[in-house]
Image (cartoon, rainbow, N blue to C red; front, side):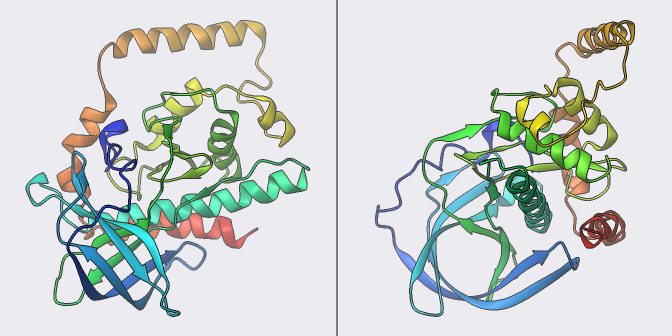
Length: 299
């Protein structure tokens, strides 16, 4: 679920060395592969705190460690949907799909930068869904991200910083997907990002935060074509417009902003969370994700 800067932000700076009662659990880990449009599963062992060390508007966050085959442990966090939130736990599948698709685009972005001789690189944290044996509720698992957390953009078209890498990446996804989608809501530590949102042209897939064509339009309205966009050869969204057409475009944007006033698209999104967060709408997801998969297979 997308709640702007209010979801799980305060918990990320908490130190991982504070001791809590820990239980060890056997679990099954589900990871989505966007190239094949399939979920893959394998067994995993987790050391999980009994009590949450933080919470956001919709989720509780628990310290955890994932035990690898060689016995080493990786600091992680497990996120659980609050029972009183009204959301179904299956929303965690939406979260994982969104982040893994975003990371696939990040890899393409890195390749494009390398080919252009540019040093810019970025990545999204790998997110999986885990089911602890003996419990039916799915949970979200991701590596712990420490450091100064910065939010560069949201899913409603607002830019929080002037970071050119974050802005160019979002516009890159729009162009590379043949204008079918945009990866936005860019936030994280350095160039390690998490919790993105994807808007698609048909509004399908990627949870209730997908504002569809309106979300893409909002992104384009505030996008600033920067030097990195030019160096990557990305066409300007204003390419081919005359001075008069540009002036008309800016005037139209000003009128739209004035008409929106204090309306917040987040309110509309939240109103549909309870309905849109169910995992039963598999036809929608297969339709939207299959189209996106074809984009990757074609490259």
